[in-house]
Image 1 (cartoon, rainbow, N blue to C red):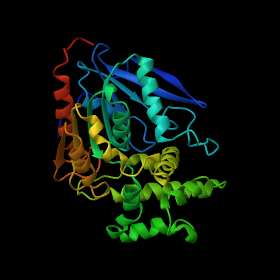
Image 2 (image 1 turned 90 degrees about the vertical axis):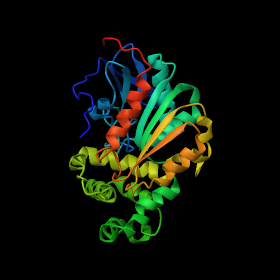
Image 3 (image 1 turned 180 degrees about the vertical axis):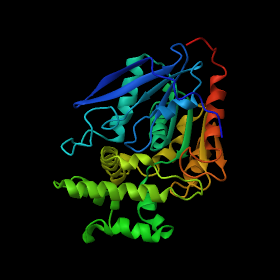
Image 4 (image 1 turned 90 degrees about the horizontal axis):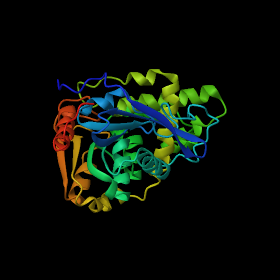
Length: 326
């Protein structure tokens, strides 16, 4: 097991940032107030930024900013409330939120760290604002393209046929041959609480299935929480149904905008729900990227070799920063 930094690294500053349309995002800063700035972009969408993200950063070296993206975690309002609209919750809103937070905190540039959906968001942010990114460290790299969404919601049925049949058959017959993420989003907006809860549970059951392709996989305990299930399912289906509001393939095509920005992409070769071809394609277009493929790992950091590779990358970028007492 890799020794990460202490989980007890508590924030020394936190707040709520008004980002418009009634949305306030929760943010916190950990580590060294004079340290190297970094920001963590959580996955999901909708997972929220948990204390585990702090453990990849040396608190003597980094000034780490964490925040909960719109509608989830400690940000308000929570999309767990079906009355909360998702009209102002898109990738472009989140990109603007990251910039607003950076400006609010007076940070000129920062290391961007993200995984899964956070890798999509990190790439989109870095390609839009390359001058604001000192380094990029991403894992379980996705682009949330229509092709990838179709792969997860339909093609993964070839690997888990029985489980996928249950996932598909949980939506009305007329929606089973179309955009399954959109079909679930419709159920999650149903006026009936029982319909919404069943849809959230069915969606999260499939989420826990399609990442379970390695022998050390353990079910995600967060899916046992009804509130988390609803927030997560509403946001994921909303973003996936719209392919993150990004032009198909744009994050690969425009990865050359990152020329001059160093980065590391860490991906599990056994990540079947998010195959490594996306990370490889990004690395081909981004001349300063290092692609690290971990042979036995699946999706996420809880697999052999993933955490160590991320720690090596982040520690490596931090070595040039002078250590001071936090």
